[in-house]
Image (cartoon, rainbow, N blue to C red):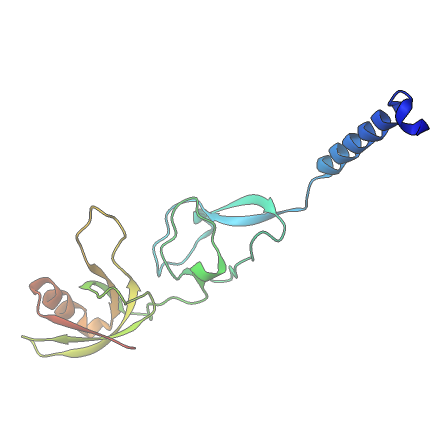
Length: 172
């Protein structure tokens, strides 16, 4: 009972010591690492260059570091967005020499999906790879995305797409 009847100097000292210890603990901070963020908007299928990356300090362990050796955006990355591992692939989706052509795509087509393109009037058939899908802009009514096609079919696919005589088959 002696503890409770005397002036509370000891309790005040203990409380002050706890506050000081908490303040010192907070001052030490946590370990920080540099993490890549998109400095500009990066379109799906394009190589990510050093000028498109801004390095910012974040707490260590907050996010997994992406593999940035020969990086290519696997989806659209908005300016200011962190470049997470799921947004980066190690290789270009467009094979060397192929052309990217705007084509109407179904909603299930994602970048990297293989498609079969068929022309109704010109009667052609070729394979393609979805490079990017239609934008998520609410003011846009376009359903077209970019599909990489072999150079021999680029012009005929573009014309069939423009005329509305192109059939797009999506690989399951």
